[in-house]
Length: 127
Image (cartoon, rainbow, N blue to C red; front, side):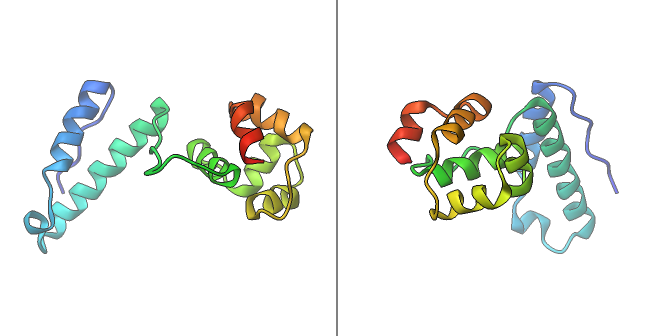
């Protein structure tokens, strides 16, 4: 299998993205080698983006605090337990906030702002 190029700069990432965007179902067909290459190229792009701090933008802007927390979890590549540890709150408390069963305390609101850079206005508006 042809190996994807290594990506060490933004320019190389853009070139790899251009190559990847040219693939389509018709082109790939049943060509398993080409499919493997496309997947490897996508992984290489994803790895570079992770290292450089890129993360997928949400299709819609978060409008609830739970949505914002889920977006931040994706950004930091945290699961719920890791996010609770990062915020220094009990995991069950975070779970209740995410499910809408618990409101945010002032202490947690402060942590959301300081540790996740969520604006105080957003927290107040959605809490």
